Length: 333
Length: 302
Image (tube, rainbow over all chains, first blue to last red; front, side, top):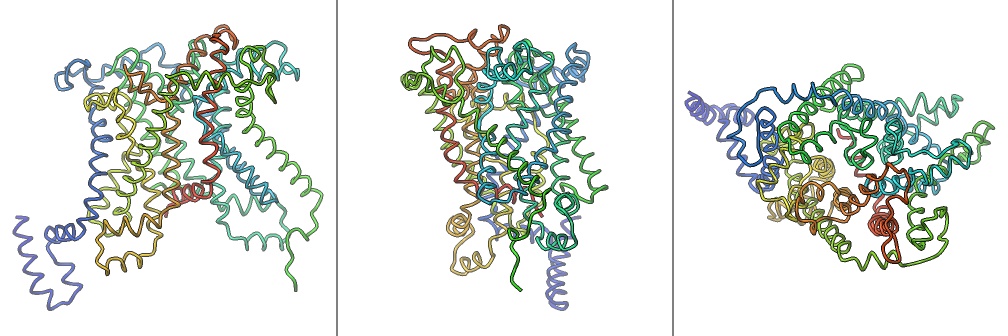
């Protein structure tokens, strides 16, 4: 049937096209043949894309297919196809796990801290650095603020484990200033972990995250500021009524991404700061998946936990995107 | 009327106060960003046994090169360092070239199947198979305990591809058209016209991918199940840090500090940290103008 249509269209376009002119001809040309011809005309371009598509199929889509082991009782010694189906057993097991509540609370707690405190700080930092008068000083402090971003979490972890110990720099400082009477083992007590996660992450990414906002600020038309100066606006008013509204789009975009990542902990960071003692406040979904999957070899269970996280993250993204579209008229796609 | 420059306008008291506080704030931020590195640096140049007493904040107390000597004489550190350099150079160049090659056709609106390809890529940004299925795939591909696990799975990155696309779109079409009239095909145009014009974005992506490779410790931890000799320096350091972490019960540095000859494990760690950190610290300031632009293009799309 389809083939008949195509043939019909082909002849139709051949004869009628001449009558109706170029536009008609383009419209009526048979889809299939036209697409093939177009493809062949672009063969060099297509041959450049295809390796990328194959790469994605192999390294992104095959693992997505591998998710089925979350619903099967998979053993590493036998192929996936041989594993018996168990339905939602592993999801149930996770929800009934004695660690489930702790893991969820830690994941969400750390993410919420990063969202409510960690998210606005780079914006404030960008606004402040934008107000620096000397261009030289501005540039140098900007460059220095990027530095921690380029350090690895391992190196930072190495510094932090030394500094946060009882005889480390932080305790030396706090005791000398009088903020602490007794030295505290910061990483050796669960109650400090969330705060440490927030502070160290903010320290590392403050300058880097500000780049995007600074770029958005630099795009604001200078004439608006001049007009506001003539009208007698002060610095704060200019920041609140010109700069901030001009970068709302960028802020919204970053917020959507941040919200969709609520269940995504900074794996590299948590894994290095986590230890046997603070585990009750430092175990998050990502580290749990790694632990049960890789060190205990419970592949199916770990995959189920990972899938649970991925699905919720996707839902969060869609919700955040939709609300942003409705409220601000901006969205990711 | 002559133009009034901002400096000629008299600043109000409030403005002066704000500027002073702001400058002070920036100085504190700069100090906080620099000091940890400085601390590691001075302690790594201090005699190890003397450093165990602590209290070295600003300058080495007993200057010594012993820690560095030990590190450079340790064959396992050197080997790990070579692995890191190797995987960074190979992985970065492949990632930059491959991603750019795939991005170029996708920057053309009239590419057949473009929407489909882009949708396929966008999905990968928001959903993935996760840790275990990826591990199993690598196992089936014989990538475990194989140096190539650092290179091939890191050869492509969809987010970097978006940055490339946005950059390529800015290149005037007339350049490509004139090359086409001269008889060049799309591949030649990409190699001879587009790539030479794309140095800023190539530098940006090279920096992103390079830092990612250089700093990654998880690859070595996860995929080198029985080939310690293929672990990069970051994984080597991770093991040292994890050892300190497991002795957190005591809460002190000295508890995990093992004396080794003229130096201690802590001081060796510090020296190794300096060696792994310095190359990046020296490179990134010079690439700054590129990556700032790159981030901008990546974030402010359409």
